Every structure is written in structure tokens, then in C-alpha cells.
Amino acid sequence: MTGVDGTTVATAATTATGAADQDGAVVRRAPGKLFIAGEYAVVDAGNPAVLVAVDRYITVRVGDHPGGGVRVRSDLGGQQVRFTWAGHTLQPHDAAGAAGLVHVVAAIEHVAAVLAEHGRPLPQCTVEVESTLHETGRKYGLGSSGAVTVAVIDAVAAYCGLALGTEERLKLALLTTVSLDPRASGGDVAASTYGGWIRYQAPDRTQVAALASRAGTAGALAAPWPQLDVRRVPAPAGLLLQVGWTGTPASSTALVAGLHARGWRGSAAHAAFTSASNDCVRQLVTALGDKDDAGVLAQIRAARQALAQLDAQVGLGVFTPLLDELVAAAEAAGGAAKPSGAGGGDCGIALLDAADPARPAELHRRWTDAGVLPLPLGVAAEGDEE
Image (cartoon, rainbow, N blue to C red):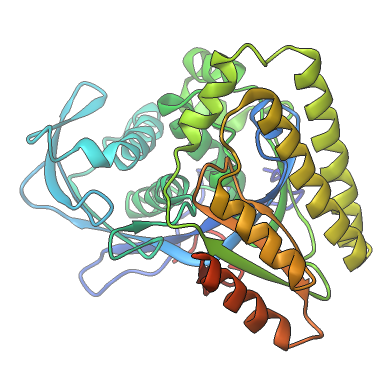
């Protein structure tokens, strides 16, 4: 099978590989993500965005569970819950305790669907989830839902002896995501799957869901998905990526849903924003490929301006006072900055000249004075892995 990025990947018929604990458990992890450009436009099929995977991870361990069914423990939800199968769905013994485990459960169910179509049941097992995308109760907005979906799919599939290539893992994670939130772009699961800097555009999720309904989950993984495209892009040659957290969690799902509620979609303003965003992403990818740092900084500013115009037109609250402070501090330190993702809180990103070692310290001081927490994040060069 040829992967979305043009590489050759394994099919489900191959033998699974990966690390196992001494007791036979399988361990996989997937990185978090940040949007660099293309937010909101990427929700519509075929529109591109640039994302980067960051070096904080969701780690998933899958091992035997002699008690029957599936037992899930996650520090994302803070619960340990036993599930039993009712048809094709997992039913919790403690519904309240399972409230924070929806992405974990959906991912397990989608792996089970592939196995069932090959005539194999999902064995009883324990699925344990640990996250460094959160810290002492803080949610940083680094894509934990996408990362846990990707890591659970990879770990459970490997535990069951089902080898999935890179494209197949991405598609299965997208099917899982769409089953929970049909409007989600899937950029987070793409970054968690591929790692590094990527250009991503989403498929038509309605068509994808219909394909899975018609052809089955395994059939959908094997079929081409028009408009889905993931390709690696170079990291900025002479720029440092810096990340600041505003201290306020935000809901991307709620912000994206706000566009539907305000009558903006389908308007002339929507078309103008999409055109500006797509042009920005195209020029950003070109600048990255050409090692044109000035061009990269210019497109970060252009992406910020497009988001600001959207915010002014629709009133979503993409920009907050602290995000404004984050941007102003980065500009004062000689860089370019913008909100990352849907905005409304969470993180902002800045790019600074790597040749001046004093710039990051200056930026961090300015952010700290403004009430923005600098996050010590690097790029995760690889995606979901053991």
C-alpha cells in the first residue's frame, strides 16, 4: 500500500512488530500537536494546514486482563473502568467513571471492528494510558484527544497481532474521530501519526463515514480517500519555535461549532477567509522548502491577520487579551506569533531568529511579565511509536 505521504507502508496482513514488556504487554506512544497555520479553513475538505508534532506524549500499554472484557485506566480521565462487550460496543460497569474515556473506548471499538471483519474477536485486555500533555491538572491544548486516539489504535492493534501501516493508522484514527465529532478536521491525529512538521488536508468526512458504512471499516482503510493528503515539510532552517500557554483551556469543538451557528459558513466572508488561509499555507510551505526564514515569518503574520479578520467578522473570541499579549511580546522580541489552533485560550506559537541566543530568554521574560507561561517544548521528529 502507498502511504498518504508517498511512502510504502505495511498492510493489515503483515506481522505486527513493536516493543513488549516482560509480561507480553505492548507499549506505544504518540506526540501532541500544535497548529502553525490553516486553522478553521482546514475543517473543510481539501483545505491545507501546517502542523507540528511536539515532544510531549500519550503512552499506552496494552496487556492481559484475566477478568474478562476490557479494563481501561487513564490519567486523562483519572479513572479505572471495566467494560464488557454489548454487540459491537463497549459498555462500562461504571458509567460516571467512563465519562473521560470516550476517545479511548472509540479507538478500541474501531480496532475491534477491523478484527471482526477478519473473523477475529478482540481479546480481553487491559489498556493503560499515561499523558504528559497535561501537567498537575493543567490542560495545555496540545491535542490529547488526537494523540490518545492514535496511540490506543496502534497499541491495541499491535497487541492483537494486527499490523497497520502509517496510512491505515491515520485512516482508522480519522474514522474514530469522525464517529465522535463529524466536524473535526483530523489535523491532530495526522500530526500524532506522522510526527515532525506536516502539511495536512482533510478528506470529506461525510463521504468517509458513508464509505465505512458501505464497505466496512477494513474496506474503508483499503480504499482511496479523495482530498486526504499528508506530506512532510522541512522545519524552519534558522528559526526557533517557542510556545506560550495562556492559562485558560479552550474547546476547539465549541469554537468551530460557533461558525456553523453564526451563519458565516457559505458566505462571501467565508470564501475570502478560506482563500486567504489557503494562500498563506501555500506560501508558508514554499518558504519552508526554500529555507526562506523571512518568508516564513511573513506567513505567520499573514495567518494571524486572517484569524483576526475572521474573529472580527464572527465574534468567536479567537483572540483573548493574553493571546494579544503573547503576540505583542513576540513581535517586540523580533519574532512573529499567532494563536495555535482554534484560539480562545490554550497556546500561542512564536518563531524567533535562532542565530541570536538571547531572543528566547527575552521572549520568555516578556511572556512571564504578561502572565503567559513559556512551555519547554521541542519537535517530535517521529509520530506514534513504541
